[in-house]
Length: 475
Ligand code: GLU
Image (cartoon, rainbow, N blue to C red; front, side, top):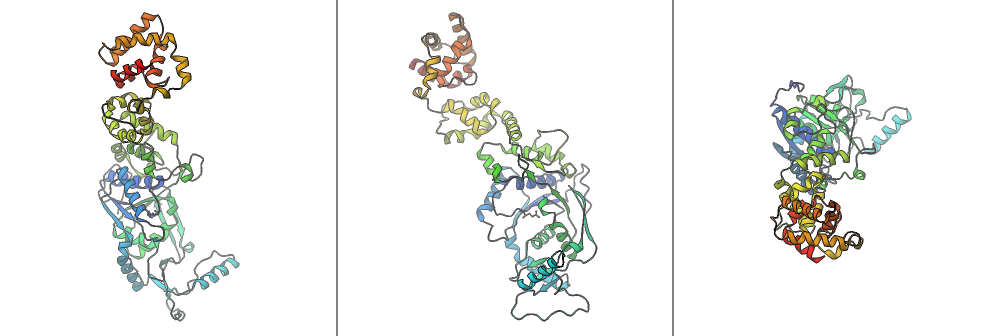
């Protein structure tokens, strides 16, 4: 098909897919690949397909499938079709295999593992690249060896011997591989099960995929897949291979860098919209824009702006992006997201104005976890006895207690608003001829057990008069 992704024009015929192997969690690299495929489909008003490549029975687990679905749902990367499971498509693969055998684009190979090993040995000894020598490849006028009794054959793809495979990679530009470099790939095992590259080809064909966007660890598979698609008479998709993500140390991003599952970022208090924004910038750009909405991403996404070079994971920048989205969030929304985190800390949100607390704290928070930690000032039990003795000794001096007593006396009769509390503090300072710290810090220590808090007038107003006075009277 003609797929001019360079114009901003829509192309509803676009069909992309995300095709994870369920052998682990949805990790950052996978999530980014999914995001690019999703954004490309959405940009064009096309279709985004989810396909679970679960043919590796030893490594695929239902838990991993669920983890991938959870990760996609958290990031709101909704698919339009699927999930399709390769294990449920075995009949279809066998049907296509049979067709290829009948058409002569695939053939049975009866070489034993020992024979193949000997083939490789010979090649090595002669300084050639180890490759299948074509023993069972049918050629006009060639006599094939007798079929060894009782031996189950593999099926090989009859790869063209001459010429090149060329594609114009959406990310890397033109790539050419000589067919001489490619072996006659095994597409079915002796037990008849299809191999990885073959399933991908049949699926991309059947699912009408027009654009394959995937990690560049798959570049080597592409010429093989193109040859098989061509043998099937299929329309070729376009391919775009995105470079990997590097860790902050320049090594390939791995568990060592704390990159396990995207859901771990949920646990750690990152917002999905921040994650989407940050992941999009790992290998894609729109001018100098660092912050953009999901809608803008969809509007702007094109493959020309995908970077040819590897992107580097930068936790500080992720925190910066997350802090931005936290600041932008509505207070009630933040309260809803932080409440369960407070509960996990043993805090209580009944009777506190959590949205107002969020309004106070969100200016400085990088994660929802930090917000929950900070909110415990208002939602946790207060135990005066837990205040560090050195804080008491330094700040709750007799002089300080006299000022606090004055403040507490008047505090019973003012209107309990941040403004009125601030006014009372000012009046108390004036009366005693002291500066702000002489009241502000003793107040913090007496009421919160800490010398540092957000603005103390705001803290007092949010704590409520009752708690404040009880704590002041206690000291
Ligand atoms: N299942 C492959 C993987 O998880 C992706 C295959 C593809 O995108 O073509 O790496």
